[in-house]
Image (cartoon, rainbow, N blue to C red):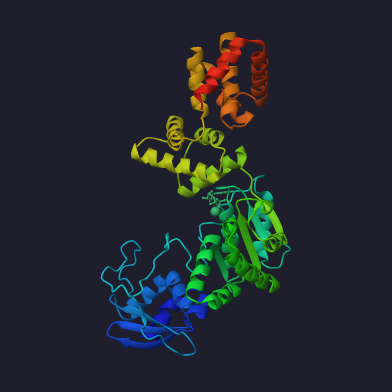
Length: 462
Ligand code: ADP
Ligand code: MG
């Protein structure tokens, strides 16, 4: 039975993990539909359960049948089997949601099924195969980080970029980039053991290893990794014990020429609560930051995303969105997703009106920033003109002044660039916006009416 299981598993999991995780298993007995296998440690058992539950389930299906069950027997010291084997009831369905067995003796360990996104995740390395260089749009904002990442991907452990540390704010593409590196290495160097882990998960595994007295397994496991990707190291701040073990693993890997890739949401110098000796190692290799993408990159990212989704959206809508959202890529994607949802729910085409409406809802919902549309609406109402007037080509005095005030408020209350503000005012040049801002500035010192108007308008936006 066990041989049949191994056959199935061998087909599913990569050779590297097969050798590491399945070779050492000793089949003990089969009683009825319950197969008992012996594993070397608690940590080993947890790793199997966390990473290979799908493979094991399939193996049981093929060898015993849908009602096949698995029990683990864990070796404690040299050959001493635990008195009572830890039994794990394998669920009979594959779906993580309804997989929880509900009639199990509480003494019995259950399959944890902690993984989200089980189907899209590569269970061997924890890499998500959808993150690739191909769909990582290059721009000024990420050029250094991306090309350093690509160099590392091509020659892991060999370049001077070891460790490679990528930092930048939320939603700017850190996880995407480091996973792309990992995937590239996995696809091109089949024999390398690539592992992606968040610092949070690393910490939890470490704490668990202490609790279950399996620290040695934990360290040994990490020491056999060829390419270690640790995401969000800022999470290690003030966690001295975790830092200590990580320091040892880091040194071991680095000395053996293994590649280490790190990300952080802030620059290393701002990682306080991290031990100096660890910090100084982070600086051994290359540190590269990710910036907020500029307009062209935002447009390119959206086009790529839409293309991947097979959705067509008119260029003027894309341009409008790219001009309006300049915080981070995740928000940009969020808006596209809502837009597609809106369009399909209301059976409307995705046009400029729908885009504006969606954007307004999102911004109102999250109570975040002031949109350019709101600024224009308020200013138009204040001066008794229309939004169309503000955008029109007309240079009539009674329109030029409200338009300049609106640009001034837009600059102050949104964080759009001058170029984007110009775009929202009938496609005007950024120099026109600069001129408007200077004019209103001057008028505010000279004319009380202007000062009052601006003060009132400002007060509308918190
Ligand atoms: P972070 O880890 O920095 O918070 P992520 O890597 O999770 O950010 O990126 C957020 C989203 O934006 C992801 O869906 C990612 O694919 C996308 N993204 C970020 N940068 C780019 C880029 N340069 N090209 C394409 N997609 C990107
Ligand atoms: Mg991330």
